[in-house]
Image (cartoon, rainbow, N blue to C red):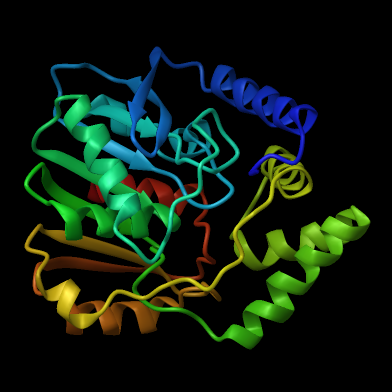
Length: 280
């Protein structure tokens, strides 16, 4: 079970709806029935505009990624997807990261929504999902922007243990705010009270997947022909920016652009996100 209790799930969905209302945008919500679980999608922007799929990271949800990219809906019809088995409105059915399941799930959503020439924007774990989709079937995808993506490189595991994993385990056990703040400080360039509350509630009420993160092989990367842009964060302890750019250049023949966000930790700040929006 992903949610530890119905009460915990309710707390998370209350925060989800609070953030969605705070965005003050015109949107519609639809449920897409896939063989990997029912998936919630928030749609915003003019339906005549080109389609863009926005995919959040671990411990995230569609309203939070929409908050990070508030201006994309002026140029695109944005489909913000709630990733399955995350703190959101999609089904709590966890897929296998090592297989192509996440890619098959996303391509099924794209086909059921009848979308073509899609721009993919994947942040963090959303980057892994985007790459898995490209590995599986890239014919529906026009271009992909990967922001601090999982699946290209990993950081030093010891640094991750001491700065993230140990404080997180202590927080889950003790519920003391000082431990979750250590995690947030390691991950976020800047964060607000809502982000702190959402992350705290998530880690207290969800069974998160802490299994090792896979890395794409050179052979698989070489088969991707869709134009890629990779935005890496210089001070990302999980997926170090310079290391990521170096490997991306050596394995992706369709890599069109790389950007290194200076002084950015894994989760960029508002100014960094504006820069990324401009690029997209």
